[in-house]
Length: 332
Image (cartoon, rainbow, N blue to C red; front, side, top):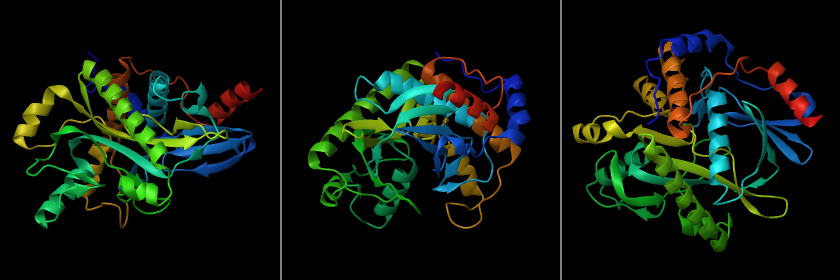
């Protein structure tokens, strides 16, 4: 079993100390053209991409005002763990990890698709299901017909593929497998391969965390093409940012009681934002210290739950100076 650290006073104080130092944006112009996503900053360096995982956190497709200490390091090292473990299913774009917050990857052409696998009815899928049921509409999400009378957080008869578009702005929207092919996003042959690999990745992830006392509830994958048109796994894999994790020991009791599950993902932050009346539109509320600390503990706990290894905060906190020095060593 993974030893969770939720009550580690020393780590909590370390997190609080680093709140003013959170790494929100990379500024490394000598390494190429920069492009920023919700959490990652990318630099295009010759035939490679430098992927920098910052401490930014997004929710409801909005980047929040505050960062989460050690989030970038924990996510990057979680992805490193999974990219190594899952390459038996499909090649990925990672070349090297020269810094706790950095990956060097092969340049790829991303497929504009969020490949989502769900094993439980929760989150946005539950809210959509509940709305469809209240309106007397067919219980169909992204082309998947769900059984009637399911409850929040209920385990599905089998995992399902519920893709969405990958919006450059605004919210991602549901899309069916048929629409994916009709819109020319990928061919049926490529889509079949993506779906097959995605289910294998989900099964592998769930098997690993189950041994550590966790449940992989749902997750998102992204795929792309190399310059040679080889299909590969890209972005991040099975992190607390792209996946929802629950603690197995609490699942049954909390499901029967109809209360929120104990999770190690950013749903905790989403729930706090909903309580403030924010679901993606309007002014983004500032996160208070206790929410920031708990969010940091969640992402670190997720790293430990997944890898079975104790998280070791970097001796020198992430900064442009540290990243630049490590990248210069790699590229010299």
